[in-house]
Amino acid sequence: MINFNRVWAMALRYTLNLTKNYDRLADMFYWPIVDILLWGLTGTYFVKESNNPNVIIIVLTGIIFWIVVWRAAYEIDINLLTELWDQNLINIFAAPLTLLEWIASFIIFGSVKTMVSLIFAGILSFILFQYNIFIYGLWIVPLIISLLITGWVIGFIVAAYLIRYGQKVQAIAWAATFIVAPFSAPYYPLDTLPNWAQLIAFFIPASYIFEGMREILFTGTISYAKLVISFALNIIYLLLSIWFFIYMFKRSRKLGLGRLQ
Image 1: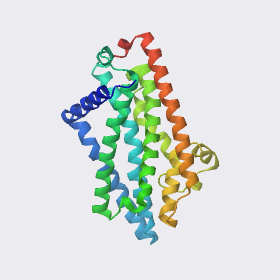
Image 2: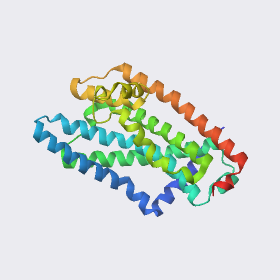
Image 3: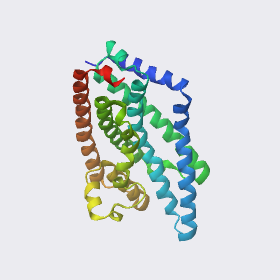
Image 4: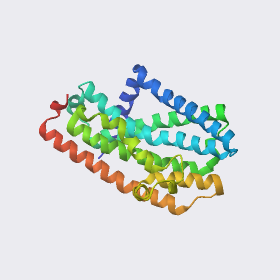
């Protein structure tokens, strides 16, 4: 059984640590500012050249909602890395905390931070480029949830390798979402990809979400099939990724968690 008091305690611990860690507090806002300014201005230029006002909407949609995937994955991995950097991993499991409770605290804390970054990016894009993230109506809720789960999947797969091999593989924490991004087609139609890449995208849940967003923009409706496929793939992948993380954790514990610090 999961003890939600312990989950809440861990989430609160990460929150208090965030308030004392100015670089991690700043990156909630710094990268959205950079991305929106860079790509928003690029999109504005393309609008002037092509006379197609949808260009900037498509670009900003990709930028803003990819933040959900990136931050959901990043928060899982950076919190695990922080424990490794601070040599605190053994202390955590000396306490009466189960692995599932630790996982739950990652998800809750990371989701809150992700939503803060998303809201901030949405406000900034509206002020600078008059882009309203709520143009998707109530569809925005399942779209964001699906993207969150995709981020968790990436995060737990990376975390599995971190918990097994330690800081020597920490580079994958920064690279993982960028490997998935081209096949998710956040900034361009899926048929833009070459055939081999489209085959990979077929198995990426986020590709169905971004295609669905463009459907809403151009037609006002979304294919229910895309949502169903996205959630089905996400649920399967999430269960497998959590299982993989637990499996790698158990293997690592047999070898001794102290070796990671």
